[in-house]
Image 1 (cartoon, one colour):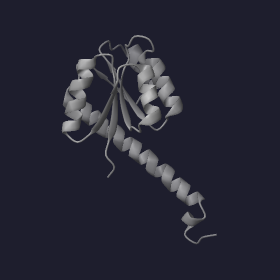
Image 2: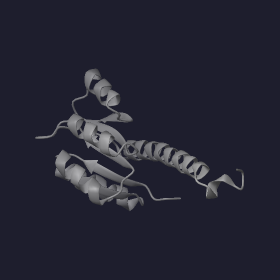
Image 3: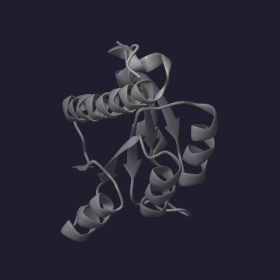
Length: 145
């Protein structure tokens, strides 16, 4: 099975550093970015499956970053992180394509559970796409013409 790759996006560098180390300690590849633009730049160079995205960041906020991620990388699942949870924020994020949201502070157990759930969804989507592509290709039709 392919290894889960995550991206943590938050302007709190201590949270990023600590969480990245904890993810890596349990065998999950983790990358970090301290802003929306940095996250978008990293995505051009690094493949990830799941993004944990803080909503309140200076400059490009999480909602704008979420919109750009879902437009350019629709198969990546995004989980919103917020210390300022309101129902409006959660609903807006879900409407923009986020899979779920977590309210800070987040336990490592919750991070891992959400990451694994999101990775399962990503894996199923990629399998469906691969199966559809195989069915459309001449080699994938198994001699049926």
